[in-house]
Each structure stands twice: as structure tokens, then as C-alpha cells.
Length: 63
Figure 1 (tube, helix red, strand yellow):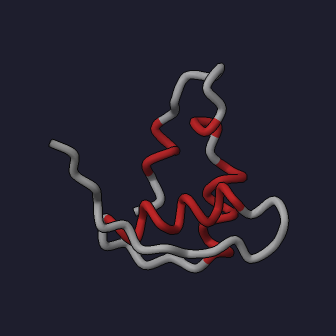
Figure 2 (cartoon, rainbow, N blue to C red; figure 1 turned 30 degrees about the vertical axis):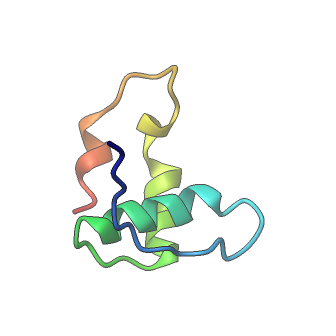
């Protein structure tokens, strides 16, 4: 049996904005309303998006 999540869609605003759009979609799924600009800052500031670096607690400070 397969299931899917009801994640809202937010399109990329420009080239290179795929990660901020993904951040915005995940946060919206969890009920956190953030602009694409805020999502970009989160993506830029958070080292946890890089798989070769251990996640830091700052990655979860956006809520």
C-alpha cells in the first residue's frame, strides 16, 4: 500500500531557488508560514543541508 503526503506546492521563484522552495513546502506542511526570502535565508544559513557535514542545532531554529 502506498501513501502520499499532502504537501503544498511552492514553485521556484528563480533559477537556483529549488532548495528554498523545498524548505518553504516542508515548513508549510508542518504549519509554518514563511516567505521564499525567509526560506532562502534558512537554506543559506543552515549547514545541515550539506550531507557531508553533521547537522547542527541551528538547522532547527527556524520555527
